[in-house]
Amino acid sequence: MKIKNIAILALLIAPVMVFASTGHHVDPESTRYFKMTGRVDDFWFRVLNFGLFAGVVFYLAANPIKAFFKGRAEAISTQLDEIQLKLESSKNERLLAEENLQKSEEKAKDIVLDAKNEAKILSKQIAEKNEHALKLLDKQKEEKEALESKKATRETIDSILNNGFENDDIALDGSKVVSLVSKKVA
Image 1 (cartoon, rainbow, N blue to C red):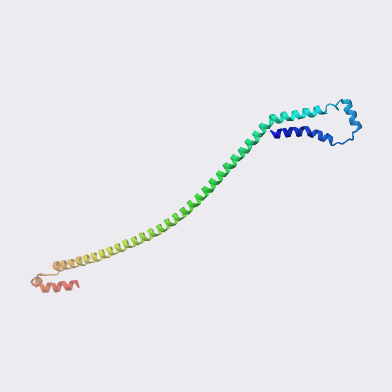
Image 2 (image 1 turned 120 degrees about the vertical axis):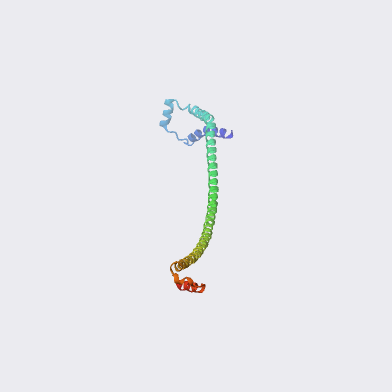
């Protein structure tokens, strides 16, 4: 309320001060103008009218102008708060993303290490299976050779028994048969 009173008083006193600063020198032309127009006497009425007009404008416009600027200040404050929240949120998200990135890198290293270990284990298992398969193949080869040897021996014995004996040879004893078989096999 004091500010309104001071403003009104300043508006009333300002024109007086302006005219008071002109000094005592009066231009003859200006006095003739004031006398012809009759404006010498209406100066104080004009000052009073201007003061009333300024007071009414101030009274009517002061609250809406204050409300406008107060609302504007609150809107700016709200926007700044929202920006601050977004900034903090983005900082938190960045920190979380960096943390997730670090965890992902560690997990990737673990996965690569596990993959290397599994590859070693698998290669070892494959090598063992191949060794076992080679041993089986060697064993089968030896068995097949033994079987072929027995088969060749039987064929030789059959051929000797079927073709090797003539009627004269029937009276042979066991030792002669063994020696004949040994000769054929050798």
